[in-house]
Image (cartoon, rainbow, N blue to C red):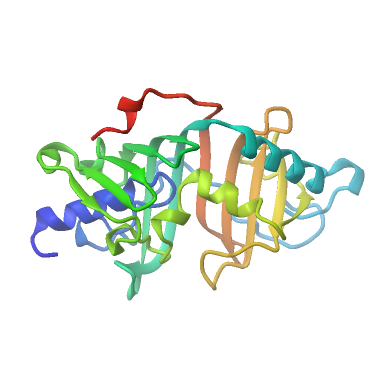
Length: 267
């Protein structure tokens, strides 16, 4: 796509997945963009007792298998969710192609998802300020509508969820990269959850390390998820390369059983 307006739209649509999707903004390298707020810090050591490591006595760690069973059941019976999430991501892809320089991004967005598969996401803040206010609506498994911020939103555009303009800087597809898609993947058959010591970003949450699931790219070595053990609301999530978090989510708000009006998904 040529021209600065088209490149900005490319960045806008990528941002709208809420979850580390602000990854190709305006066709410029954003390699040194700071996150809007501190993301989950790196797990610096594998020594027992360090954050994210099973260094406490087993009885004091979360019961991973029990949490997994409960979250699977909760996902199966929910009507929908409403989420506000801060996300950050670092990777070396642009439009589905490997690039020389690592690109970083951060955003805060609000998302509504219902069990029929419809989704609405709005960017509230981003490390590219012109993208704030952009909206994406998924009306079916094969249809996405995007409305850019400001003048870019005069004519909403349609595309398929597999469109390369929606691929993240880690080469993750849109359909894999919103919060519900992540929760469904992390609870899929074969998932193994192991309780670990809490990270400082969410010290009161129950943290689990997850294996046995499909990783979204070959470099990822570890995935961590934090839940409120009472409500099963996600608190934070991190994808790691070695001990470096390269994709993070902080859930500022997460509400089960959303039932928004149909107008929510019109654009």
